[in-house]
Image (cartoon, rainbow, N blue to C red; front, side, top):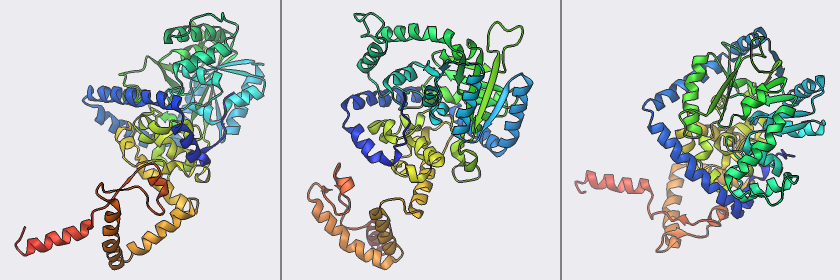
Amino acid sequence: MTQHTITSPAFKENARAALNNTQLQRALGNVEQGFIAKRSLAADALPEFDALRDNARDIKNHSLEHLDLYLEAYEAKVIETGGHVHWAQTAEDARGIVLDICRKVDAKIVTKSKSMITEEIGLNDFLEKSGIAPIETDLGEYIIQLRGEAPSHIIAPAVHVNKDEVEEAFRKAHDYLPGNRELEEPEQLLDEARRVLRAKYFEADIGITGANFLVAETGTSIVVTNEGNADLTQTLPRIHVVIASIEKIVPTLEDSAQILRVLARSATGQESSVYTTFSTGPRRPDDPDGPDQYHVILLDNGRSAMLGTEFQEMLRCIRCGACMNHCPVYHAVGGHAYGWVYPGPMGAVLTPSLIGVDKSGHLPNASTFCGRCESVCPMRIPLPKMMRHWREREFERGLNPATARYGLKFWAYFAKRPRLYHFAAAFGLPLLAFFGGRKRRLRKLPFAGGWTRHRDLPAPQTKSFLQQWQKHEARRRGGRT
């Protein structure tokens, strides 16, 4: 059973444990080495890549500005093609709708393709408690389901797991298979997962998928995968249920094609994902396969409250994972340290929007503000700017530590009084430079233990930039260089 307990307030403790986890640190090396180089090569190979990013941003901005109209148009098209649309204001509403669909057909087994929305609403735990077995069919999701974990990455959910840990999980869960079978190679693990899951596809009463995009023009849901499990999940069972958040809407099929061109390149460095599946309604009389029923659950769960605010741009996110792939903080601590469903820079903005800054105030502070996340985002989302907005709200509500609040007030007192500020700097900078010694590094500093406990602080020069500039100007005016 996957645990979905919110531990965002414990980010510091989670991060400390992650830094001391040698297995995790070994696994995280694959993120930095793999994703970054592949994305760079894919982007460089497409001359119009940046122009496509601008176009994708504009499409999503237009969709968000007219979200109500496009959602209504989408609903009408789904109904026209024989499907059903369910509106869910909260996670509880969405879970209840899924359970109602399951109970109407007495479903016992549900197959699922990878879906961050179902993670967000805690669907697996809920179904298990209701007597229904959810089976994850994405290999990474299947691995972490066996391990009783939540995803640590939005496109590579088991990126924190090493091969020997996968073997251990398979031997424990598949104890009905010969104990002397060989599982040392990745191909052997993959073959075993394929054999086990193949039977589940045919046993399932309902297949549940997420959606990368919802197309208002046609009532189509689009799912992007590299394994094909989503195709089997939505075509073999009698009922296909799509669960998607409301911001996944795009106006036309052409719009979705534009965004798809930047999605795969940003996520995995591919020109296109192996499978890009378009589903429109239930099975028609002449169709060779497909579900008898097609349901779409449209989830709000806090999104509409983001519209018209400084966080609206976050709703452009297409869940490619590029921001976390390039984030030095994510590289150091992994996804579980963030304490909820969405890790990395996008999680540092989205999580406070969905569960409240009081429960996740540490996340916007878990950033070096290096700007790499914004520079690689295919939708050009200004993530550092929005993290600053959350820091402001945290400060306004008095949620950050007292030492931080009083420290900022102390600094602000001097900053509002330039003469006093310059006098203090003229006294303090030489003192700090003296304690920095020959190496010009400060190993201990009052009120900065959180920094100097893990790294040295560069000592400043004896004079501030302003003092040096004033001296330079004085010499220039005097005719000396």
